[in-house]
Image (cartoon, rainbow, N blue to C red; front, side, top):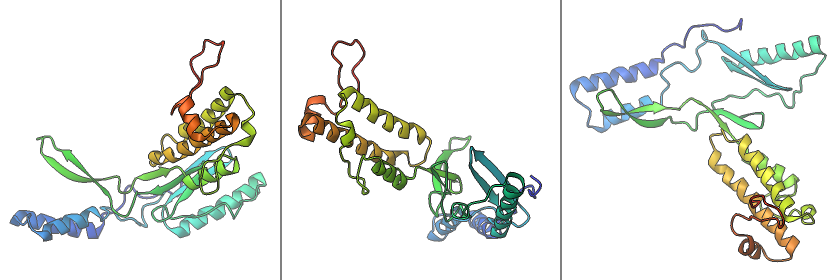
Length: 261
């Protein structure tokens, strides 16, 4: 892209000063005191390159159908300029109007952006993660990892709101029976719930907060149990006692495997 400039970001002077201080302490053998540990801690929390280098600019554009995102490694002023250029292009060439309500400029280090149903940000927190590794001699050492990597998360609040709108839970995420499905055959009910759960789990399988999706599975599992309880006019406890934790059923007269949740 024509706006891309610079081969790499310049070194961060603050990091270089800390590195030199650490080197002096190493040469003097001052590695066991609190002062040395503090310098190492500061280095791990300090970027080795300048975060905002005016001579280094990178712009990346990604589009899927009518959803798009532009990544700007540069100033906010440059991002504003890019937004106006896109707005002008859309109108002059495609006769489309850029939505000001849904088109936002966010700081990836301090704010979150939503793209294709996924929350994007940089870093899992203010401090980088520390990983224990070994060198070629087999000696263990600690190094900074993933501190500034892109993080992709499933928008839990949005997913729960969607499930609430579809009648699987309350707005607070409390599972409820889906009354309209209670009149279907059990195998149909189990399959419908399984398809919803599988669709969500597969779509967000790559996200960094994958473990949190267990709460979504809980909502659907207990909504299914409450729907079956309504169908058979028994308690939720009775549903699990009759069909087991996996809520599986076998259709009489058919050779297929049992239908499982």
